[in-house]
Every structure is written in C-alpha cells, then in structure tokens.
Image (cartoon, rainbow, N blue to C red; front, side):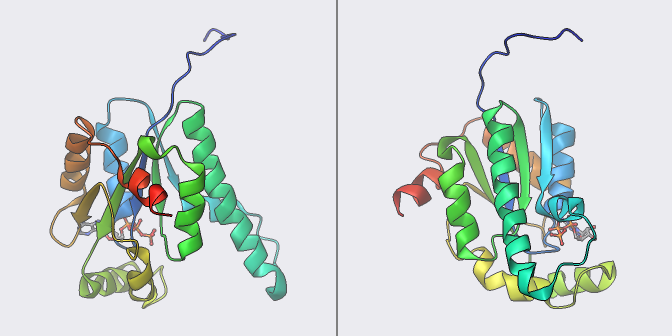
Length: 189
Ligand SMILES: Nc1ncnc2c1ncn2[C@@H]1O[C@H](COP(=O)(O)OP(=O)(O)OP(=O)(O)O)[C@@H](O)[C@H]1O
C-alpha cells in the first residue's frame, strides 16, 4: 500500500435501512455488501451498543448514555460518508428525534431511504424463533418506525427474501430519481 498525500474527494452513498427489530435489516445489509460494486460498510446501531464497555451504568444515567450512543452512531455514519465511503445503515427510527438528527447530519441527495416492512405476526414468529430479542419489541416499535411515511424504496420481508430485497435496492440505485425522500423530508421540516 502506498501512503497517499491526497485522496480524490468523493461523497459516499448512504443506503439507510429502517425497520423494526427482526424486520430483516441485517440480512438485507449482508446481501447488499455481497452484491454492490463499490466498497461498502455495514453500520448497524446494534454494533455501536456492542462497542460500549460493560461497566454497569446507574439507572439515572442510562438515558443519557444511550442517547450519546445513538447520536454518536449518526455522526459516525455522516463521517464515513463525508470521507467518501459508501455505507449501509441498519437502524430503527423508533423515536422522532432520531430521524430529525439524521436529516440534519446526512447529505440528503446522497441518501437512499429504504423502508423494511414485515407483518406483525411474522415479526412475532421471528422473535420467538430467535429467542435473543424481548417478545413484543418489534410490535411496540411498529407504529413509530414508519410514521414519517416516505421512502425511496420499500421492501416487505414477509414476502421477499433478503437477496431479492437487495437486488431491488441495487436496481433502484442505477437510476435514482431526485428529489430523494431525505430531500423531501428535510424541506418539509
Ligand atoms: N426476508 C426474510 N424472510 C424470512 N426470514 C428473514 C428474512 N430476513 C430476515 N429473516 C430472519 O429474521 C430474523 C431477523 O433478521 P435480521 O437479524 O436480519 O433482522 P434485523 O431487522 O436486523 O433485527 P434486529 O434489529 O433485531 O437486529 C433472522 O432470524 C433472519 O433469519
């Protein structure tokens, strides 16, 4: 490897997968990384929580610690894209401030906003089968996660498998219309 003194400027693409827990975001992200032509990073909110030390947090500080983790995750995604890296974001927009924060940080024309849907009964079935998520978590998130009501692309993982969702997202990328969903959502604020 040569040590470069200059790297050509580039703005990274952000493929933003939003859906409840167990909706299939990670499975789609894994497929996207397999099929996309450019080097690409899967950035999942779960992996940011997993990076935190296991030191017990006093209950009265927990909300602050969690909010800093989410805010740091959003800024890390924006930073990777600003350095020219393509990113697949795997996130749960289960509170309105999370979308507002992302809208204020990401370059809106560079975001492909993907709604990952799954019927509630199937979410409950997956939760039981996985056994590593609290029962009812996805159902509790369902109402808020898609409340903003606007995407560039939507997938129903109750019908399509992850490779097919990834194929459709990749196909959409080849001829992306503007304004993007992020541009529309930002101008509506
Ligand atoms: N399209 C699909 N069809 C059927 N099962 C799927 C599909 N996508 C994912 N699954 C299964 O659903 C479970 C959850 O998938 P995955 O981990 O991708 O979801 P997630 O949205 O990333 O969840 P979390 O946010 O809780 O990490 C896994 O057991 C996975 O095998």
